[in-house]
Length: 206
Ligand code: ADP
Ligand code: MG
Image (cartoon, rainbow, N blue to C red; front, side, top):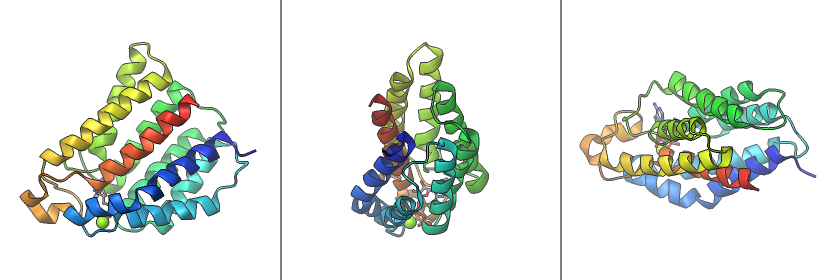
């Protein structure tokens, strides 16, 4: 039987591959029409590299990150690659995930993306979904909510973050070349990260 972490990463891959055209269309508006194609190629690679019986969450995340780094390309390849690899480091040797682990994954992913991409919040990137998601998650946990309730809050905040990206101008990545013309469009990376969070959130309920 495949491990939980394998099943969860497979579901993330399925979601991204299902939404390949949608993500690419978003990137056509403010980028170079490759985000979905890039990410789908990356997760197709991930599915060939992961071993179904790997129970070690850290090892599986690390393999995912290394594969994304070498197959996705563009800006998002190194960013997602680092996010998954650094999350993997935080989870190395663990075979179950609790509230603190989820917090550590958020923190490692955000730090990794910022280390690589040097973006702050409000620049119309994946961070505009991920950072508010993390804050809502922490607020939920601090208020005594369960892991899955806090992840629901995180997903709501990430979706609000996507909406927020429509209202602002891009100042990082290719979309920044458009200046004010980037306003009105939702950020592809904020959209893909939100999809991943939603898959994890649903998966943790199963
Ligand atoms: P490229 O822009 O090289 O074609 P993709 O289309 O795959 O790469 O990914 C674009 C996404 O990458 C954007 O929607 C944005 O969310 C994210 N992105 C770009 N630059 C940065 C950055 N410096 N920091 C964080 N995210 C970024
Ligand atoms: Mg692109």
